[in-house]
Length: 84
Image 1 (spheres, rainbow, N blue to C red):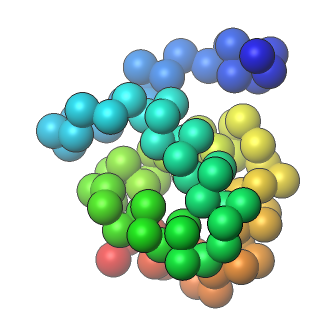
Image 2 (tube, helix red, strand yellow; image 1 turned 120 degrees about the vertical axis):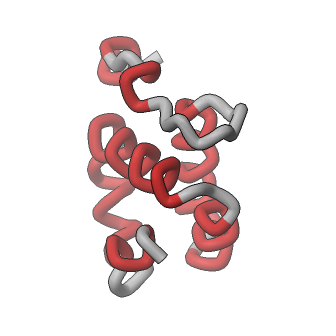
């Protein structure tokens, strides 16, 4: 496992939105979605609460900043879209 991932306390990022999927799993899903393109990412994010979307993105920044930069490039107005 990546040492960055080992140092993160995922519980600190766990949103209280009633969803039972662990936030680490959400980040893993988001990372996989990035590999599959815009449609996959939007489908994944649209099923989550706004709070969960932001938590997953903040964790992605910590774990894989380059992947987040790619996401910013493939989805115009990405951060605004997180809050819709």
